[in-house]
Length: 488
Ligand code: UD1
Ligand code: MG
Image (cartoon, rainbow, N blue to C red; front, side, top):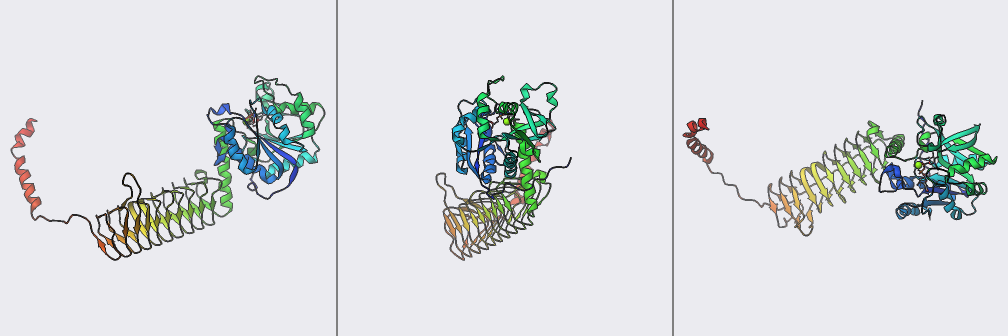
């Protein structure tokens, strides 16, 4: 079976659907996840489930978006309200139909209501627009989005009357052995004509083992009354998938990541072994950048053109200019790397660090709140914290800034064209002026003026013949022990 191609991301071309209210059901606990976190707050594809759903709705341009909240209502509100949705509290949660009834007043006089489950985050704006259009054109009382799945386990099944018309939705727990073969599933995404919905919903009884009011039962009632109930099979069945279990979450996450990588590749990014690369939704990458296997690009990471990010690197809210080389196994967090700079391998940039244009930090170098100026190099084995390094300076292997006295952090300032010899400790607060040298192995506790040499170590003394004399002494002391050794 050929894989359906996702046309494009949720676009933010707004349409207007002022006769439509969208209702998102997000009050449930998600018992099957076995979690202290409410289901819709679980993340897939780099965002909480419910956030994906609201984001897909916004460009539809509905009259309003209403989210039914219950479990961890405040946390859900914190996510959806900034996106322009309002919330209604459902307490207790007596089923999907009950959730609708609770939101009736909020939906108000909208002619149509689109209902979406908060746990099916892959739905796209285009699909919602198509649902509304089909519903209006078909002059239906209800239109359901469905999918045909190889494994429909866990979903309510669609029983058709024939053609586009639906007879009933049968929940998994109520299926007969024969009905288990039905593989068209209810996605729980519907468009209703409100004047038809409310009377039908008022008749629904909690006739199930959970004693809940099922929204799905309203469909059967409408159909029995002779109202038009249509079903539209989604082109890409993945959009319809709900998350009831951890395995569902992993599956949905997989799809989101795949879509994101596909979008980047369409935009001219090379991704090697793409299935091993994890990219968050807000990440941007420019043309001709190469991402090697097992890389993670997280948060709002922004990568310029013609960069190479080599294997095993993790970038979190990192900003890279053009032509940057990130060697293998680097961790770059909340930091910037300007054009033509090189980082790694095995480098760590902690928050608020900045490697400027043409600069280089090498293996086993850790930066924290520090700037490495244009063309400067910190090639090996250094800790650089709370430090500003100017242009074209060279920081020798093993240089450590001692920025912490046990109580406070102190700054180090290194000027332009400075040379710090290997294995130096710079005890902050301290300044090394432009063009200065620090002798290898120094412990610098006082400022080094521009163009001076700072040297702070014990003077070397060579004792002639000391080693050979020592060896003779040791050998003499060993001799009588030969026989003893045997005894031991
Ligand atoms: C529901 C449908 C099922 C469909 C499946 C698709 C019903 C009875 N069943 O089953 O036909 O195949 O979705 O994914 O509708 N919620 C509330 N308040 C409640 C109960 C649920 O807001 O009182 C919310 C949940 O938080 C969730 C959504 O409604 O976001 C769906 O509830 P869930 O328990 O996941 O229903 P399913 O068993 O998946
Ligand atoms: Mg569900």
